[in-house]
Length: 153
Image (cartoon, rainbow, N blue to C red; front, side, top):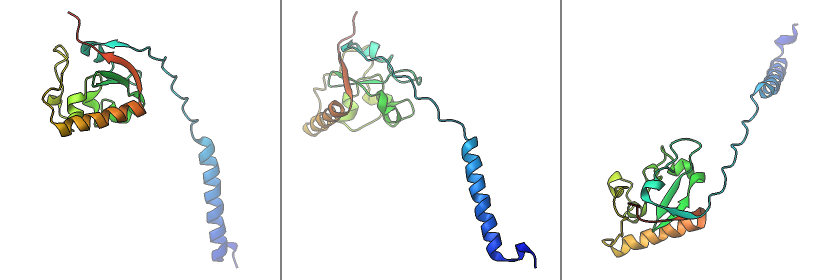
């Protein structure tokens, strides 16, 4: 009788094959990529809407900043949300206050970067409350890196 006629031998051969494959496939895997170098810390400063647009995360090395109620936050670590392909990507490098207050991510919620800062005077009470909730979220989660000021002439 042949050694391969017994079903137990087939099972043992399969287990040995699986273990061998797992061992050699794991050792052939590429080494994990090196962590990205940390970006230097940002110093708190004033940003105009035009200056803020430079921080929209369009490349992997570009920081992502967002303004909410006149405060500028570094949301780079939330790149999956605020980066170019994220659900909030249109707010990157911009004042997101109106869109967050109205819970709308449409481009028409963004004020022109060469215009005055949106004073949000027409918001309803529930929209102001929503904006306040968003502001608290950002203050708790992201680093405050600046203040939004009017464009310089």
